[in-house]
Image 1 (cartoon, rainbow, N blue to C red):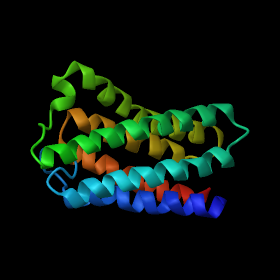
Image 2: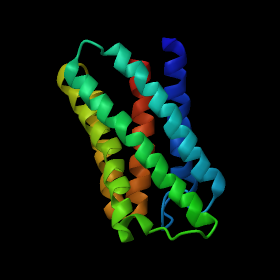
Image 3: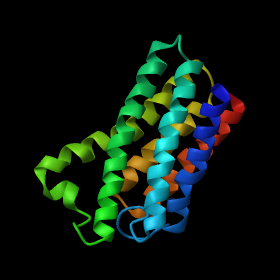
Amino acid sequence: MNLLLKWCYIIGLLLFMQPAIFSFGLEGRTGEGSFVLVYLLIISLSLIQVGLVYWLKKYSEDQLMQGALIITIIGVPFLMISQFISLLNLVGETTSNVLSVHVELTFVGVMSLLFPLGLISFGYVLFKRYTRIGIIMSISAFVMMAGLVMTPWIHHSGLIAVSVVGLVMVKKL
């Protein structure tokens, strides 16, 4: 079971970086220009969410680690909803800024931030208690989050860095 969860995480991370690579530096939401890239993001987030259970099991005795992972897991569905809005935008049913325009949907955008915040916490706890690579995960997740308000290429760099660091963590830990 742990091997299956680990592979879900690995495949999810490999897919997670693809939309950032193929839409690197383009304006708008990551992968917004292609149905395939948006679907890749949704599928990768699903696999990452399942794979995070691997880390929950691995660090079942560490309550602080459990809290960081649960924050990340809670943020994933909201990020998937946000990507679904990108699909609606692609078919012309809405605009890409619908999350910030409609107060009712702002909650989705805010809750989506739990994903990078959880990764920042996850990396910090890893750094403090287990290994130095955790701080790189925290920095990568922060860059990914900060890029949302700065420029797309910073956000895309953070996405790629989170994926690469996540893959290294699977190998090292």
